[in-house]
Image (cartoon, rainbow over all chains, first blue to last red; front, side, top):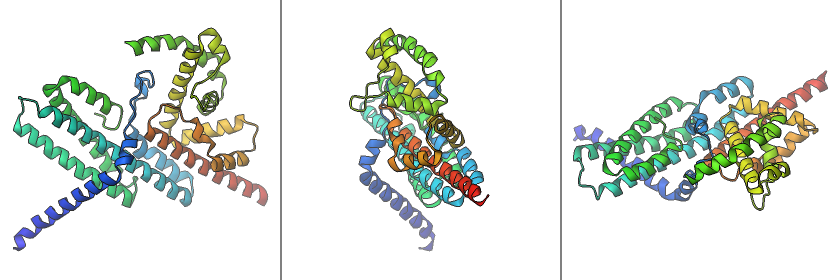
Length: 192
Length: 152
């Protein structure tokens, strides 16, 4: 019986995280819709300016400046402001990856060229990404974005890999929808 | 194709606007405020008589909107230190007393109208958050300068 305890604990933890994610997704559905990036006209932004908002929010430069130049009141204000932005950015990242996954599922249902192993791997990656993303939201909420910066960096890399895998799959299954998804993701957030 | 064509049409107007008007303003923040104040808040259209005379009202408005977004983007991705410097330059370019300017901007939230019409929601939030930070830092600096002056 005691051998099963770690598995039971892990299962409970995973269920709790997933339940929290579902709750969070329902409660913040409206916010997520607002957070979805608007489609810009191509003239709106020059290519050189398409930088990553995540890097802007979590980058160390501002915190280094604030911590060296200002008082603790400003430190607290900075932590609070960046926490709000970081959580909004993480929710958006989650929303974007979920949109890609939904698009993939919609296309995959009509595809005859599906490889079960690849699909399973993709599904697992997606699930882990969601768990990580939700855990990060919790971490940022508890500890602030400054302390979670390193983990966020790793998540960004992972998200970029996930995006690469999605794009490869989409290109194989449906090249047309791949272009649409690519345009949505290229807007920002997950950069390879 | 249509959008590319429109970009090509806008390019001379954008260049003209940059060379004749925007380059004369001290820094990106001043340019941002200038462009935002040239916009009709009811319609979202920008007006510039000289530019409209050389091109057309529509082209002038679109060129101004494009410049507005570019400058806004630059400021969103500028570091907090750079943004503070930009804000200081802008305050210095006005004839207002810095403490009154800061107080007014903080209480009225005047900086909110500087956001372009077509911009990403989260980018706008990042910009507003950074401006709030910059104003708070400048106010602190201003207070300590005033205290130093009083004690001297």
